[in-house]
Image (cartoon, rainbow, N blue to C red; front, side, top):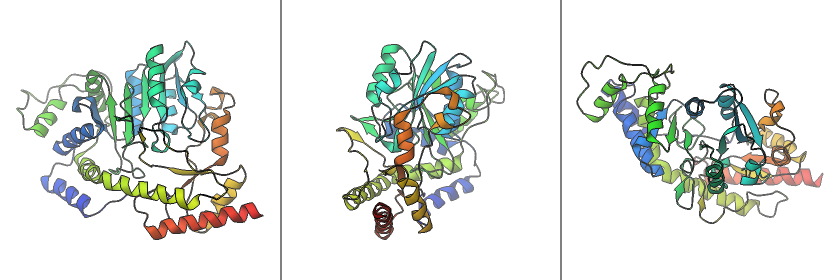
Length: 384
């Protein structure tokens, strides 16, 4: 089976984990601090603006807590989003309000967001579909104009940018994912960004049970600075969970971050190959990127007529090529279907879009096989 997602791990990652084992310090420590600093440099922000978490979803839950959302509040997000984002909103008793998306880019426009704003709107959350920044700059402008915090779900966009600004740095908050299906993987893990570094200090406390002073010793050990007096004493800023990452994951993350340019180069080559070799088929290819935008190439998707897509996907699965559609529109899920009326773009995308295998481990033979199988499946269905 040719997988749709697959990490690339090797001797360097194993060696980094071995160093952690030899140090006898597996928890949050020096390597985690180094990973946070390196990731901040990667997205071009101050290290004080980021903190690592055990998952992107936990970061989203925490952001909703810091915004103090509750019953009566609404958060606008595209229906084509990961369910964890909507769950983070609903868990606070707030109401997810789903906006439509462009059926070809699968990203929302400012008009889509504006159409569902109400006096109860407390925040806007945007996913960068497949790693494409989308109209994030314009949506950020809209949010500033109406005085709403903007949250970026940057799980798919670890190296995406628009006009020289990293995806995730346009809004007030952002969250990245490093789980086993992403480009940069740590097994599980995530990163939280806040424009206001005070928010990050708040997040760091909440991520460790709400304890404030208790984090001082770990920070001192990670930076070789003096330990605080009576480091065992602490105060509570709130009733948080234990949602920190550890040095095993962070050691892997540091290696993966260094390898990220080679991963992105290979993914770009695969996308170009798909573009060239699928051209001429009766399928819709991903639209060109706007000038000044770069993508992480997390997804590569084609568009097929409704009814044809499912037949093609099943044929490919039988032939050993795993495809899928991400993400199922949330306004059609029973738990959320009361939150929005028909959304034509999202519903069209859900019926016509098929994500093809896309990961840096695909060699030329595998890419050629995907192309061949897609071509045969599409032409067989069209000719019938």
